[in-house]
Length: 365
Image 1 (spheres, rainbow, N blue to C red):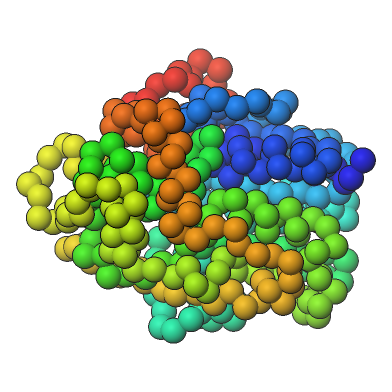
Image 2: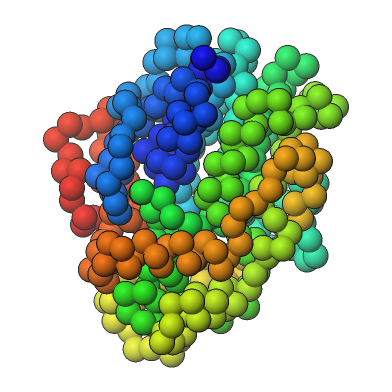
């Protein structure tokens, strides 16, 4: 049996795709999740046994015999509302730090996905040593925890921090609040893609399948961890491909062409309506998204030479379109709140441990 791996947030967007891949490769996988998105399935899958629990009350005995922790449990960026940092994100830092400290005590490899959104605004291709300029509470939370991990580092504990760029792609528990997924779903169901901004800002993109590939390679010998000489710092790696930096308007154009007979329009040109406001990004002001950055991915090829992205944006969008056709995705289904991350608010503003009386099927907030 290969090493025992704990995946927190195993029923999320990444976890739902990652766990079956780990199992297929022969890893003994322990899954831990609150169940926020248990029923948020776009299509049915065979579920892996999952321990239902809250990371704020994580029982450390779950770590017995675990050799690697992939810590996915978090609150995703929420482009449709303004989440309060102290109420939402501070607890994430606290429980993540507690888990990392326990991993250090037990000499468990700790792998954590940060985000390229920590760069925020920048010129040229940004690397792992570039200045950080977070623009949202979500991004600030990533910076804060990276700093906490650095304080834990020593020659015996080197956390692996994977700065993921903007994710997209098919997963059983898909997120339609991610830009490419939203464009693909909206374009398929309405034959129109509506941009929140002028679309001139830049983003690096990475397919979720390639993220899973990187996570799995970090567990074994394919990660050349010994090349990392700075024992006082985590090993920080941007995950993606330098070829996959795009302007938002280019992503919309590619999606519309692949869908066919699909037009691209701008929210600023439309009258205010409840339908359009559902997809309005609160981080965009007067049609401009100040967050714009392109990222270099040279370091991942140095530390994981076998990492080779299997998807470019056209292949990833085509994969989603094929699935949408197979399941006959409707606009009503696409716009259901269960595919967005607002549903967590039902729980987060409810003090204490998981309330079993919560209506997990409720699509309203």
